[in-house]
Length: 338
Image (cartoon, rainbow, N blue to C red; front, side, top):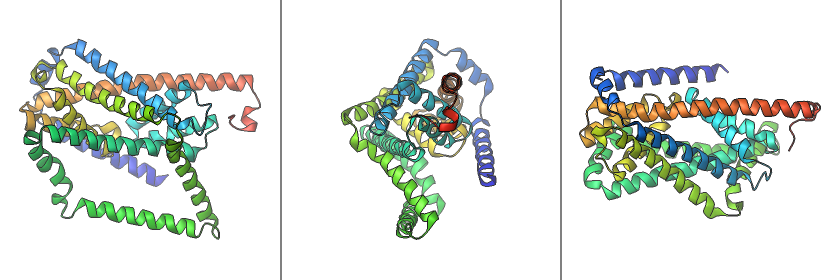
């Protein structure tokens, strides 16, 4: 518990530092002047694409879950997803465990539910790499130098060692730990429990291979990330000073914004603003104020939508549970129904 508290305190402190560096050079007169020029119809389109992305995420997660739990309804998956997103705004990463807890009440064990989320995140990581690859391939003459100098080098050369060696070391340690757990699972109770949990996690991850229509999963994933790029493009169109930027530019900025999501700060606050504003200023000649305005419009606009949907879904889940407990007063003694 103390470790978690320390982790969240450090996360908020990091967010505060990033917010300070992102906003310290803002000319607030220019910022508010740019906000007054905003084309709100395009902001409306931004929200439309945001909702489409959330719906497709719900459909994709349900498609992964169905081979394990045929009873998982769209409403349950939708509400669990929204509440998890809401928690992620405050406590980065915690929302994934929260939505597991909600959906597991439908008869799906917690470890298997977590396995489906790991599967989702792996696919999203691959999608970000593909987006970045497509953007770099189509505009390397403009984007290549910026990507190497502003993103790759800070993550590798300036650390004094290769990031890939660190990644390889972590993977090697994980592989050794997994081997040890299964090796002693028969003679050690703790290792046995961990091995069972890993098997459940693997079963959840493996549900992807049991999907009836695997092409739907690919279609949902493409739709999700196309919606994210369309959100970035709508943000460009909403601001006259960025409206000349193309869909390819939106592809790159969207990929950079998603790189910021791996930095463990609440909801990406600060990290997203800094990286996106840096990209727009260094690569496209926009002022820092314009970059911060764009990042704030996209990030905070999406956050407001997540908060509204998350609160509504939490209320919906609470009401459904109350109705079920009134209809089945013994449910609490028998445990969650499948």
